[in-house]
Image (cartoon, rainbow, N blue to C red):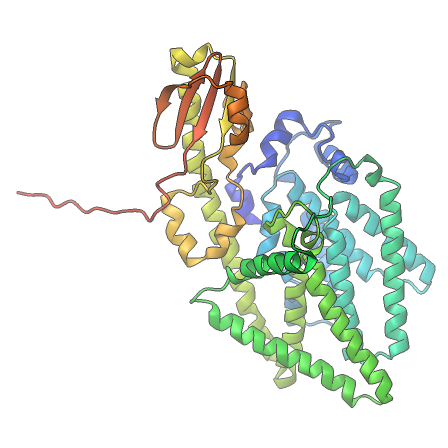
Length: 484
């Protein structure tokens, strides 16, 4: 969390939420409990920005959740066993939601609710079902993607139970209980926070070439994202982890074969394990595979953290079989993910400095040029092509760690709310397909042109045309020699 707090980068929606103090922006997306939590954290009926206080407040609860998950996986965990649950926070995609100063802490709160729903234990089945269902409803009302995390953690529990020698009847019974918990949680969410849902993001995609071609294309896109985190420097680590995971799966299958079970039960348990792995593979992207708005971004893939937890669990079992202390080698990939987080934090600092410079330059031109001070309304048009605004000083980092570029999927400078933070309040965001209608065929008069934007005037309206930055190439250092 420290790199995010240190950068203090107001990300995408944060500027709008600060200006309008929420105003039901979460409620309309079915996140009523996020809105309630925001108002509670700010001790105000409106969602006042108090970052990083919510993040710091949720941290002890997150630690407690990870502790409970570790004890759930291992009855008597040692210090090295704690590494297995750490990817739930360390996985890089979590950074994609921590970016958001309003939403990030609330999503972590939802993750905590999901973990407690998994780990809650009571001798009475109806109590387990009711408490877990209530926690799932709260988590869904905070952020819907937390449901995917719950399902993935249930799949891990299924694989764990089979490895530990559970019978088919006990495994199926546990799965049925989890399904009941999820059903109750979604029903409670449906009669509470979902009643305020008015967003159109959940529409099913309209496919022209059939579902097969659509799913294949989207699966390739998602697979390409995962490949961005592999580079020449860490390729060996992915290969070693892949071998350990395959060995862990082999160990799991061997435990099924070596148990004193009838052959049909062995086959059934093996099929359950395959279904659990397949379910995880589908649930990680989840609705992203089927909805019309294919907004592929880091926050839509946060359930992938559960896949890393499973990989660590399987690798830990293989390493401990050789020697208990060898599981400490999992610290290496953990440090790799932590290193990525800190590198990402430094990129955010550079990005913030670059965008602040451009925004203040633009604000100065709008406020000082006599030809623009009389313009009533301005429209901010994104750059063509629609690219990241990356300072040249971070280009080398992007080449070394391509995954960081995926984390910066939205150019924050293209939001008009950032100009409002500098006192320019008559700028609205617009798109290029609206440009002809807004200008009504009148030839624009160019007022200002520089490296990063053009400002044109059409009658009593102004248009700010952002340019794709040319400074995204590597920084060019030129040494000068003093001539005597």
